[in-house]
Amino acid sequence: MWIYEKKLQYPVRVGKCDVRMAKFLMEQYGGADGELAAALRYLNQRYTIPDKVIGLLTDIGTEEFAHLEMIATMVYKLTKDATMEELEAAGLGAHYANHDRALFYENAGGVPFTATYIQAKGDPIADLYEDIAAEEKARATYQWLIDMTDDVDIQDGLKYLREREVVHSLRFREAVEILKEEQGRKKFF
Image (cartoon, one colour):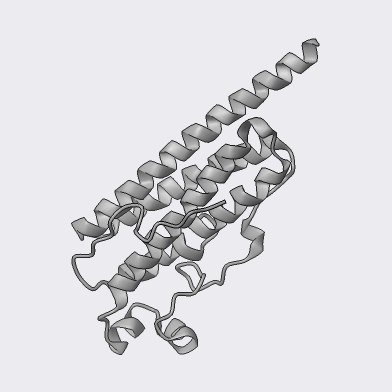
């Protein structure tokens, strides 16, 4: 199903060590509206979605894994040269005690990822509206993250991710219209 290209979807540059920002980015790594939750949600929902839009869920779910890799790279680069004091000052002391410098699927508050973040109702229209909401929440979070840093390199990567959320939201809206149109035709035949 997948072919992995050994490069990031978009280059990740970091202008400086910033452990505080790395902690905030964890929201998009393992949070409820983050990239892992989105990837798993879409790849799971495709089993109960009509064939007309199944490819869309596969495409976007796969792309979300690429975004997850970008966030992981940002977090790694922002913390790789940090001292223990900097990690503790940014609130990552408990993370270090549990995981050293390894990434772990948790949100910015340190709450571990849970499968309850993955919504799937089995109703295609309901699921697609959930997906639209998820993309819009991710877009908003990316904007807030952009506002929280003065590192133009990090802002660049985050702006790219924010714009991809907008594209995904639009594509899910198109899928809703496709399915509603199909449902309308069935009522008349």
